[in-house]
Length: 455
Image (cartoon, rainbow, N blue to C red; front, side, top):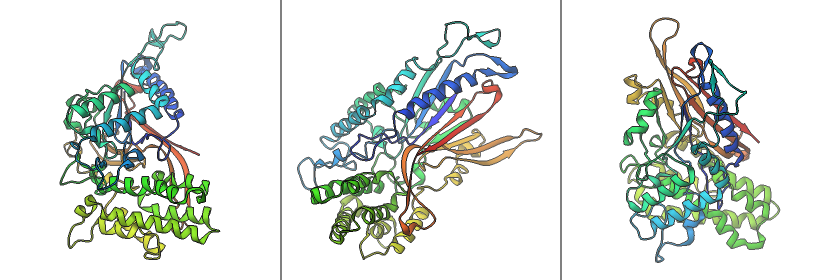
């Protein structure tokens, strides 16, 4: 049995809160149920499954959304950001500190994973004459192996070298992973044992960030930061800190609480609309406060656009994503909300996959084209999907190829589509996982998915 989860985005609590630990407890209950159901074989014969592979398909820990990176400023000794060169003195130490803080903040949830991997959670009744024996106190404990692949928010765990091996070992210990300390793969081809596990289920998977130019640089590869990293750090993480410092007690508590939720806003480029809406809701009676907040955001936007990394990404004589960002980050009179809304829609379609289907990319995967994979799985977009790609063969039961998106475990404030200019955002929490079976598991069922939302 193969289970795939992605985009959990566990943080250290300095930005938006992670999903509740109860999600991990719910997941453990569901895995136990899935394992029992998978133990029913062809002919309605019960035989406990021997092993369960759980693959975390990227963006599980989220060291990007931490204000701990903001303790230095450009030009100061020891200045560090996620896009600093990894060999910069203090870089690995900073990443390790943030990683340990994330695991400490989410320890009760991660403890569920550790206990699953240790054989303390998933237990099944043994078989007796092809049926589960509920009368005996004996229990069968399948081997649970948890594997970590990286995405665009946790790409730092892909960096080579002993210092990063030590960080990966911290994560392995803290989450009960099966990875070796030198390998948190971005692609299956990097790590043959995991590739082989996917192949047994006729599945091919990747995080999917390579199809989002806002969060992946095709020229430089995965071991570098992107514009998405800089925007998240210098705008989303930093704005609440600067507002609190500048306004002090003048800042309404409800407003500050809402601004700390910036990292949960979707789509990301709709952040200016969220801020404007929160200003109207919590500071409508003070024109001066509104102007100060808008001015602060615009100032940060100017500083963001002057970051060396951003300027280097701005391509001469092309209207690229940096030029789009230059307009989107403004919420002052320089850009109307009509302009912002149009740009959000345009930028999402041209440069990013935030909320858009990646199914068309699955059609170009070698594993799809050579028919090695019946199922192509991506994460990244946070939108769970099941999309038929192709079918072939004669008879009533042809071979099928299907694209899946593994969704997310996340808290959201999602922009309402009816009239984005009204700046209405709907809160909810989402949780998705995918399950694939061997031919003799689950009564010969091939797969099942579960996606839920609650508020």
